[in-house]
Image (cartoon, rainbow, N blue to C red; front, side):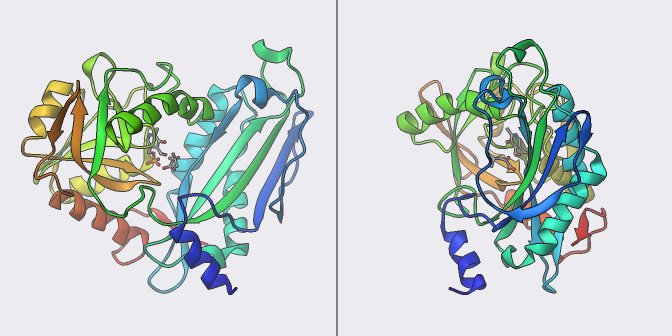
Length: 339
Ligand code: PLP
Ligand code: COI
C-alpha cells in the first residue's frame, strides 16, 4: 500500500489509533538527560516497579502539525505546548526537560515523518509524553529520579465520530479532577473523568460531560467550554482547576480581532441554561478543534442550545482558526513554525 493511502486510511479510523513508524526518545538518569534519538516505534521494556505504573507520574501534551495549502508542514503553537508540558512536569516532580530539547525532538521527528502529515481536513497529532521510570514501589512519597521522554505521531481526522455534528453534553455538578491538578495535563485526570463520561454516554448518549462543580462551569474531559454569540465570547477565567487550553487562548485572540467582547469569568449553570435559549456553545481543544454543542442534559432534562444545530458563529470561529493553521489566512499572530 502507498504511504498516501496508509495516511488517508488512518483518517477513517478512530482518532489516535494509527501511528507514524518512528518516535523520538530521551532518558533521564543520574541527573542528566541523554541526547535524544529517533527510532522505530516499538514497545518499551520497563521494570514492573516503575514509578509511573504505581504512582501515576506521567504528563503529556497534544499538539498538531498542519499541511499547508503549498504542501509544507507547519507545527501550531509548539512553544505554548512546551511551556505547559514543563509546568506539568514540575507539578508532578518529574525531571523537567529543556524547552530546546523538546522543540528539537518534535521538529526533527516531524521532519523525518513528514509523509505522515495528511492533507486538510486531516492533521498530524503530536504526543510528547514524560513518565517516571524509577523502579521503586517505596517511592510513593518521593519523586521518580529516572524518566523517559518520548514523542509519537498520529495522523488524525475528526476527534468526535460523525464529523461536524452538534454535540450533546451532560452537565454534572462534579469536579473533573483534584482542585489544583486540573491545569496539569496528567494521565490521572483523564482516568478520573472516564467513569462519569462512560456512565453519561450509556445513560444519555452524550459525547462529553461538562463538569460544573458547585454549579459553576469548568470544562469537559477533553476540551474547554466557550459560549459564543455575534458580539461576545464568554468562558471561565483561568485558575488552577482546569486545563489552560492553547486552542481556547487562540480563539479568544481571534475573537477579539473579529471585534467580539471577551469575557473571562465564572459562569453558573443557570446562566448557561439561559444563554442556551439564544446563544451558541462550543468545545475547544487541539483534538476537538471547535465543536458546536447542540444540546445539554441537566438534572434529567434536555435543553436545546440555540437552534440545536452547529452554530453559525461557532462555524465562523472554527474556519478562522483552521484557515490560519493551514496557511489559508495570514498567520499574523506568529503561531506557525515551518518544519
Ligand atoms: N481540557 C482538557 C481536559 C483537555 O484534554 C484539552 C485538550 O488538550 C483541553 C482542555 C484543550 O486544550 P488545548 O486547546 O491546549 O488542546
Ligand atoms: C487534545 O486535544 O490534545 C487532548 O489531549 C485531548 C485528548 C482526550 C485527545
